[in-house]
Structures are given as C-alpha cells and as structure tokens.
Picture 1 (cartoon, one colour):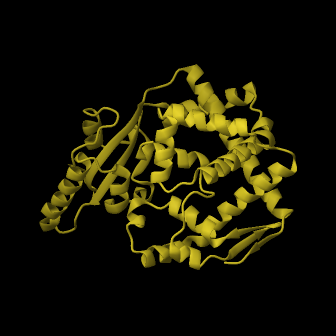
Picture 2 (cartoon, rainbow, N blue to C red):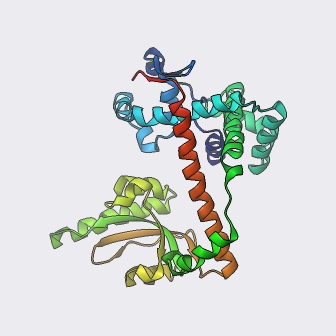
Picture 3 (cartoon, rainbow, N blue to C red):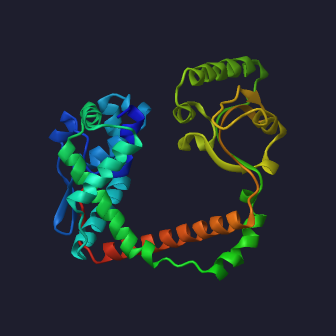
Length: 320
C-alpha cells in the first residue's frame, strides 16, 4: 500500500484505534468520558487528534503538539462520544458485522489499490498498524454505516414534486453556470510599494516548492493570507461571472490539476490550482443535483436529531 493508499484506508475506518500512542500519551492515560457503561480513555482521544493532524502539526516538538491537542480535546471528544453512542445503539437493536463482511471490505480496499496480501500487510506494518485492531476498527465503521442506513438513510424520501419546485431556483443559482472549483495561495498586496519585490520573491519560492511536488493544500495552510487558508486554500465552486479578469485570463490557459504561475490582482498576489471545471447542466442533470442536495439536507437534519435523541437518553460523563 502506497502512502496515499494507506491514508485512504485509514479514512475508511476513521479514528478508533490504529496508531500506537507515544510514551507520553501512555503515561497520561486516564478516563476522559463515560458513555453509558463504557469508558473513553485519553489515549483514544490522542489517537484521534494524531490522525487529524497536518504534517506541519506532526513536525512540532512533542511538548508544543501536546499543547495544541490540549486546547482541542473537547471538540474531538464530542466526536468520539457520538461514534460510541451509535455503535452502542446499533448493537442494542441487533445489528452485527460478520467476518465475511469485514473480509469483503478488506478485499475491496486491496482491489482498489492493486494490493496483494503481502503488500497490504507490509504497509500496515510500516504505518504502525496492528491487523487485528484494524479489523476491529473496520468492523465498528461498517456497523455505524449499517446503523445510519437503517435509522436515517432508509427513511429519507424526496418526491418528484419537491424536486420540480427547486429546479428553477437551482437554475438561477451561481452553481448552475460555468464555474471553477479551485484552491488558492494568496499574499496580500503590501501597503508599501517597496515591499512588492519581497512578496514576489516569496511567491516564487512557494511556486518552486509546488513544482517540486509539495502539497498545495499544505502550503496554502502555511502561507496563504485569506480565510481559505484553514481549508487548504479551498475556494469551492466559483461562478465565472464572479471572477476578476486576471483570474479568467489565467484559468483560460489551465487544465484540471494545473497550478498557475503567481499573478497579481488589485488585492494581492495569487497562485491557484484548478481542481474542476463545470459546464452548464442539462435539465436531467439539474434534477439529479437537486435530488442529491435535498437528500443531503434531510440526512443531516435526521442525523443531528438522532444524535440528540441518543444523547438525551444516555448517561454521558465528561472527565476532561
């Protein structure tokens, strides 16, 4: 399993238990929450935060990284509690995951990344993953998916009339015209014109690093000076009509996946990556997009209501 492949596998099974906690984490291990009759330990919380850390975060000294984790413990603990509640409720209503289902999921992962048994196991080992723990975590994730399918997805109904009522509004939205899904690294225009050269030199260095293969999102998090930096520079889909001429000129010469040379607007210096370009959609495409949009909205509404109900009828004790 290549590096990207193994991370995709980890994403599939999420955060319940592969990584071996550091010595510091083991020494500090303690119960941080009680969820009905089960406990969540600090080491589980640590594993979750480690998983979601950026490379920049992982490069910090242990002491500095632990300080950041400490500040974010409550948010991540809430996620762990929600997952534990879903697993408990799934088991209560009789859902179960068979060994055959776990094997099928693993086989699908191997097939997706063209892996044989040996390469799969070797790369789990390289990442410090234990195979039995891996299967347990995969089983938990499958169980949660079964639970959500039964309790949420199967109960979502979107009628044809509802779709028709939303079609015209969707057509009028900016998402229906030609649009560009892109990321940017933005450096503000200096107040003092004498600093222009410094900004251009900084952008040139960033561009060189991108050309050398460094991850655009990571560099955006590190250098970009606008609100999209926290999302790896992700601007989402931007309608053509909303873009400045400098962006349009640059995008006209780009293909999906391309990274632009640094270019100026009246706001500052930009480097953009084109992730996707969308053309105007047919009526059938619009109806399908509306159906998906309404389905996602209903899912989130029902999911939040489900978690709220599970929390209200459960005993949850926070010990942070």
